[in-house]
Length: 492
Length: 124
Image 1 (tube, each protein chain N blue to C red):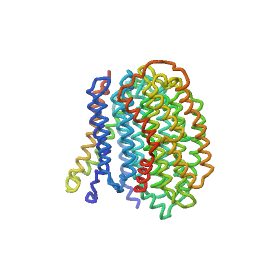
Image 2 (image 1 turned 30 degrees about the vertical axis):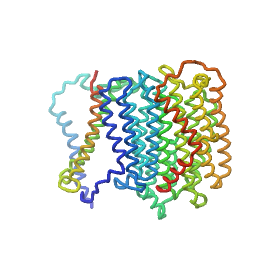
Image 3 (image 1 turned 180 degrees about the vertical axis):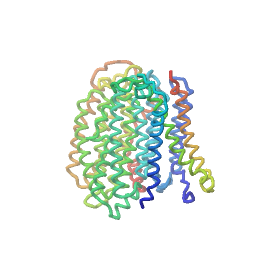
Image 4 (image 1 turned 90 degrees about the vertical axis):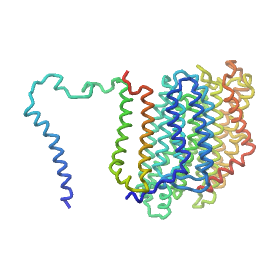
């Protein structure tokens, strides 16, 4: 019996194995580091992420490779998303470091280890070719993130946010698992490529399958945070310590995008007309409620949370324009526009939350809109960086957010959904109001406090580079767009 | 057909016997001197009948979660142990089958060291 056993090829999973091994090492090393700054833990974590990115790059063949009995896949999309993921987490940790070190009541070394484990979960999600692998990665990410939200255990807000996140997250996992069981019932397999094959052969009970699809889409929608599964987003973004918000708002979005591609495109592409309708409703609702609710916020973390909801809705527009009347000619184009949107959003959002961390110091969170008043007088350079971020999020030319929106709208129009494109533009216009309000506060109001910005040199340098990246990628978006397109062409 | 189920019937009977026998024996031959404490239901340290919404020490939770961790370890070790001979006698998976379980245990040990050094095992 054991002679049939094939020893899996570990090479395609080398980045994951490396990060797992290093997370164990760092957990032990951190036990013996006593300093508040945790310089050693921080350095080791960053080295791990750099090493992981290097391994991902070096082992990338551009071919689709399956391993672990086809449960795990390594393709160009996975490699690209993992590289973006590592880069994002590296930047996040640089921004987060000062904040973590200054807060007395926060668990310090654990933050870095949990970030690594959550990253590992996301990488597993990105490379999943089996519904259970996908679920395993998802839970690994979620459980680490629940704990991270509650890291500041003396804060009632943070514990409340963690509790809500945990309960709603468990519900969403339940929905997803129920959907997975339905797909298994209809197709007899959990392997994503085999699900697609079973669908192509056509001998499948479509009622059960579509029933399961509804639950899968609900689970995905929760993880993306789109209406009506968005309730956790504002509370968690607001309640979590800002570095954790920064992390939640960036890296998991890339993993959630991979989840959409793996489940809906790799697995259930045959059902595209069905899931496109569902996603269309989610997208329109998210853009409407996200943009309208953001106007009423006075807390900038909450405002960016609603903004995230509307952005995820916009991203889904690309996913709904893939197949029109059985014609999948534009599919790759549409999906790569979504991927570009996601990457552009993550870059911008990291800079946005990074600005909050830049202004925060011990005992002062800088998370109210009023804290941004008169930033131009305190630091003209960072006020202009924040302006770039806000204008990019609003989709004003020529920043990266504009080209992201433009690419998605192009896909929507090509698919013939003119009304959808008009609705998207209208809601973006409404959204521009609250982004421009931040700019107005920074440039035309008097500052409420004149304390000089206390952040470290590395944060300042990186944040400047991040802001410039938002501006420069707006001037030269072709490379990134091309990368996304190639990754999807070679992987689907 | 039905005789295939005979072992299950036997299993049920033996199970019932093992459950009932000690009670009957105790009832027949044990000395009987009841008091209030002895008659109260056994409930691992808690009062048996009271409001469920009471405060209890958060350390119970730590112990419980560590217990689950190492309980699960056994759940994976048992099936591995039953085919261990087969693993070492198959040339192709000899070292892989051994190393894989060692990796699993090593990861658990890392968690164990963490819990230990953090003082999770001390009831202070």
